[in-house]
Amino acid sequence: MSRFVDQAQIYVKAGDGGHGCVSFRREKYVPRGGPDGGDGGRGGDVILEASEQLHTLYDFYYRTKFKAENGRPGSGKKMAGRKGKDLVLKVPVGTIVRDAETGQILCDFTHPGQKFVVARGGKGGRGNAHFATPTRQVPRFAEKGQPGEERWIILELKIIADVGLVGLPNAGKSTLLSRISAARPKIADYPFTTLTPNLGVVRLSEERSFVVADIPGLVEGAHKGVGLGLDFLRHIERTRVLLYVLEAQKGPEGILSELKVLQQELAHYHQKLLQKPAAVALNKIDLVNDLSVLIPLKETLEEQGLPVYLISAATGQGIKELLEGLWRLLTLKR
Image 1 (spheres, rainbow, N blue to C red):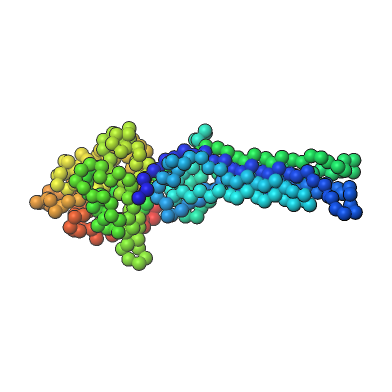
Image 2: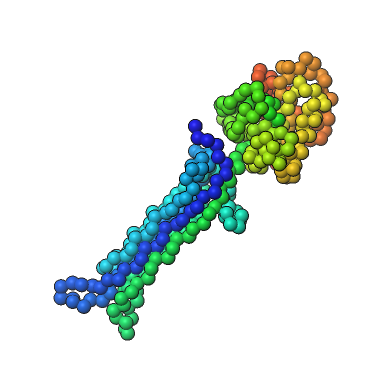
């Protein structure tokens, strides 16, 4: 399995244009034919293409320099040189491309098959046939091919999902993802079991499905890089709906305290995250003796616009209601 890499800096160089040719027509009975040097071929482009088969920038972790093929030089009989082959680099959907020098966003890959020419090949030089004039009938020079574009770029992957699971370590997000989809993330009872974002597809029916991302657990100070912090906060940006996963057995005060921590970390990273539609899943209700103590809290949060669902990812209790609620949030007209 490939290592998860969500940032990379690479150098790309398009192919140089081929040189034009200096040549003269030499045939039997035509001892002093005119110039017939052909043009050089254009250099190959460096093209980025989004692929839904990729989920990491691992391919750019060890290899960081990429060059397209140069154009071939022209030849006699006005024969043009072959164009250099384009170099196509596949990147995951959700990748943002920035110019390393200016920080400018060059492209945002949001759908499979999307392409972007990140470096254009140099134009081929003109052969000497182009430079013949009535006063200069024997030009002994041709144009050189132009160099291809080159630049350093930054690739930044932000996973695209419909619902992002947000919670502290051990809240049960991975268990929930494995319950509602075919995804099989690593699950264990210690912090940071999830070291990479995991994706799962939830299918409610043939025509109703959505993608859920299990974001590694946040901790207080994550926006400053504490824990796994900034490495994964960026992946929450592209989710349409947030689902706060909290442990029901911690009681109303503990739940509110943890919810506040999560919301503060999201706000510190980017205030717009708190403007996304959101819901709360109170998980592990199988460990709560008296569920009635959670009802006042549920009512309070729902008055604040946060639908609350009492669930057990371990037993499956309340899961159907949760998924239907998430679907309603995803289909709300905004």
